[in-house]
Image: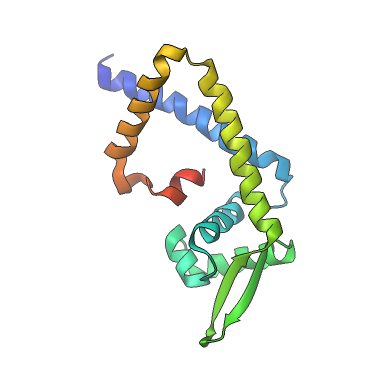
Length: 154
């Protein structure tokens, strides 16, 4: 096995770890908010109140998908929708306090789980780990979702 193959295998394993951490952080929600719904709340948390079409573009999904997610999140009390007074054909989406708390809670649990994993890495290897992960992010660029929302949405 060459160095490239070894790196790919290490990334495959790391991917399983990261997906496990990300999904584990959502388990406390008990299905109240789905992963796609969480991603919408996360985008809106970053953008602020936004038209559904803007959120859809940011997520790379159809506006009709955002409408369906909005229906679910509004029904569960995690999202509010209102007409834009400047253009009544535009619907503006905004997380409610409960929706914002879901995002904060999931990200807090994810960060705590990642800290626990990093704490198991020998102290003298942590700087190398951080450097390697930054190099991976830089190499991926925007081709593989390296933007802030995409990285935190897992």
